[in-house]
Image (cartoon, rainbow, N blue to C red; front, side, top):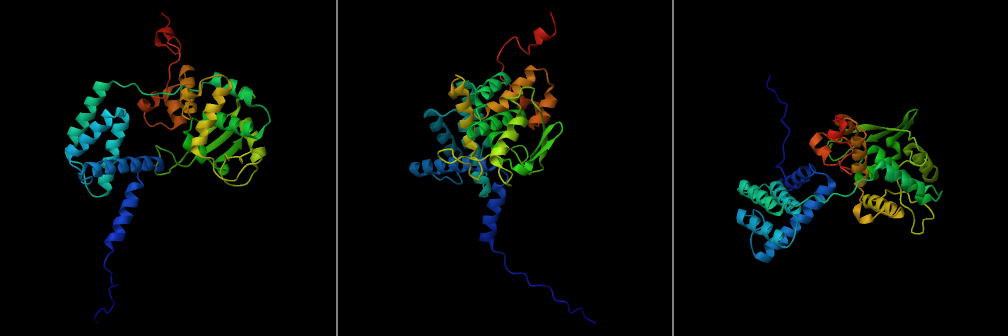
Length: 322
């Protein structure tokens, strides 16, 4: 008997809809902040091309080289121009194109780096001594000071980037006998959101203990599910149940160092992460243990966070005992 089972009818694919979905999936490879920067860079490039009356996509090698040269002539740093090229390349790829003669473009940037010899603009680290001085000024009982002390001590103890610190939820924390377990759901080096846990121990100084500071903040915040760190109303009378903006953490750092007489322009939200790495290295903690705590996948990337403050501290010549 003949098989009368019918094959389901397949409708013609909607290529326009699939193309838009393809762009969304391709762009999801990068973090949200990176996408924002890339989109901003791409917009600048397309505006430049429109003014120059040249094609932005697909762009010729000469067009890209002229653009990068113009940006350098306008005073942009080589690091910024390098990102411009990555942005242009990424925009081409999601549109189904590839930049031609990429070797010439890389060679151009290598020449710019040799010519400029630019030093990286590194912010000062918030070391343990600085953190303790700050916390001594924040034990006031005022709600905003209590929150900021928790942000600073937990940010230092976890060595998280400010975006990850702002992304923490109350559900990501678990108090244990030895201190605190912090669950990081997703971060820059973990775009697939496999997650990891960080152990935070009790501090030896009451004012700078991250566990005690967090408990004090939770008494103000309450136990409602949601973001861990919350903003205050304009007059600071009460907290608002919404996530603290990432840039606010940078302001908290700057306000805190200014409070103890340090120049705020020398510090940023990144100073907490670099401060932890610097303090750990100077204390003799092995690099692989520091990398395990910070989530770094390579020791070379980790070393960029070390800010040597004293030529004779954590010095190999001193440590071998000549």
